[in-house]
Length: 338
Image (tube, rainbow, N blue to C red; front, side, top):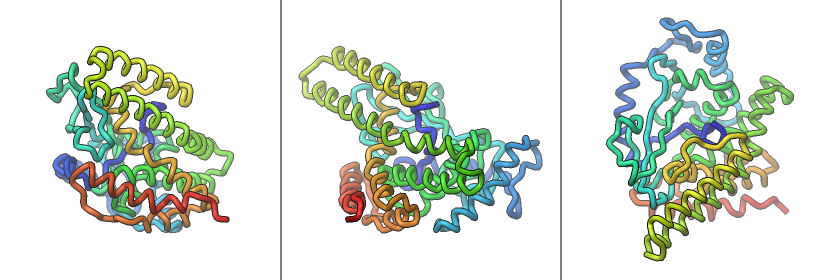
């Protein structure tokens, strides 16, 4: 759905509050994976369309391209799981609370759809997300990923594999994965399909709109944050707060619809906090890429050299401290060379 995070279906295995969910998923994967020996992925028990088999075969080429541009090899996408359609998560937070990002414990997560989780919808905003791939667990090709349009399929593979090249809080990993994976997918599509192909043009159009989308999310996040601060300070009533919230969300949905042609289905605090994981630092990392004259190898080298790699964190204060150290480091790289 345009306006939703259709490009970054990933939660990396590092946030403590998500570890239990991932361990359960990993056990599930062990039971469900169809492991195919050799290089070619296929589904012996379930017939695939020619298009789906083409996508599985294309993974070998994408992996070879990753190696050529400097990715370290990962164990992702080396298997196909017909039984695993996707990974269903529900994210929730109080209706007058705006978490910082996915790294914030205030944005709670549960495995499953909202109807299977005892959540009071009058007190909580809920965002349901059906995830096509999870990095950090040797993710297979799921049914939902295989059914995705070809540009998205290519992009997701680059995105997930980039997560295993670095180790930071998600608020740094996700925007860097967006920039690197779109840039890599465009290079691959240009080489494989040509610059005039629908695949290349779709990827280019989406990448070009990311900066504007990030500014929209950052603006409305700040507006909502101010609103909720006033409520918690006792300056306005809950009824007025919720009325102003509804107005802001309606305006935000309208702008996102203008950008993408459709508004997100789930406009609420949980959804916006989720998206801010990807968008808070996207402009800075995009500027780093631009300052290299769109040189992906140079950009990847800069991102791999970011400080505070593999630094453990338990609190949102520690997350923000790491993010500040990283963004302070990147700032000089975001300016074009003299």
